Image (cartoon, rainbow, N blue to C red; front, side, top):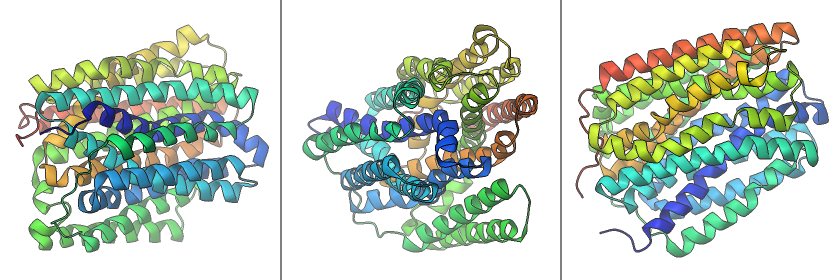
Amino acid sequence: MQPPHPRLTLVACILASSLAFIDGSVTNVALPAIGADLGASPAELQWTINAYLLPLSALLLIGGAAGDHFGRRKLLVLGIAIFALASVACAVAADLTLLLAARAAQGIGAAILLPNSLATLSHAFTGEARGKAIGTWAGVGAIAGAVGPPLGGWLVDAIGWRAIFYVNVPVAAAAILIALHYVEESAEGELPLDLPGAFAATVALGAITWGLTLWSSHRAFDASVAIGLAAGILATAAFLWIEHHRGARAMMPFAMFGSRAFAGLTLLTFLLYGALGGVLLLLPFVLIEAAGYTALQAGLALLPMPLGMGLASRVMGRLTARVGPRWPLTIGAAIVAIGFGLLVLVDDGAPYWSSVFPGCLVIAIGMSSVAAPLTTAVLASVDDTHSGTASGFNSAIARTGGLIATAIAGAVIASAGRELITAFHGGVVVGATLAAASSLTALLTLGEIRKATPRPE
């Protein structure tokens, strides 16, 4: 039986997840202005992104598992509230230290709201309607991401970078009001919360992302980096051991890691969204610093990517429910690889329509075939009991991929002039390679998911 207000549930989930989507794209456009105002070095600018991604990637599993246990609506509202308060703290931060602390708090809020947004949506719809709803969720989220860069660029040019964080407040307020009045609570409270597994997963993701962030900012593989990565690897092994021994009581049953499709979706997400995160960070920075774009122009330059994804995602959600995710993901990721390759046309003197637009358009076409099918396939690969945890795990993989891309991007951001363009070209070639690898992964591993239609309830 569906909740009494499934459409308003969809609206609340879209508004909540859009907070994280808008914030990521807006902050990328504002990096040069933040650096100029706060006197931040390239390495410190990198921390502006990583301070958000570090808690986000480390806490997503706990956020999803807590929602499954205590109530998804309850955790959704909590995550939105934390994110909104942290956004205000970002806007009023007097120095870089306070800004980084507030960005970390935003990451905590996003880690709670993102998995519970998707799990709440999955509970509200069944059958093919679920595929349509997820497609709409992915599509409108992408459109929100599309609005972010030009809106953020305009705010940065007209008012200042602090204004970009205030736009989150009315969106958060609307999401909380709708969730409290119209979203039905859902939980699997009879299952014990897997605190040992959640702790091990958090330590693993936190240590790995911390080590990579240090490596990126120091631009050297020193003892601190080695210790962080080693601790992350050991904690990952401990997590797998704990989940294996807890059996059915695990928040992520160990058997999932033996599923060819689940493993394939995890690897695909890591490769593709890591590459996409790197490009979305670097492209506006390069356009502003090397090509002379204003923040608004750089934001508008990115518009074809998320806008194209948004317009096509609902259609792809319906199509995936009928034909399965294998071919949409295989073909879509291959098209994304071509789009990344076209970005080598970007130069400090090349016109937008012949250098930037072709790559952005092709990436948009490819990602429109990936976003909704990937989300639907992840939810179809687990039962409803673990839907929040599964979506949290997949989001954690995507964010961790983005964090690694940010670490690699640090070397590009530190460059200047012609060297910046050359370093960017190297980055997009790496992105194209990763996207091609994700396409091959989908082709080889997703044959067992015939249709991404959720199990009957």
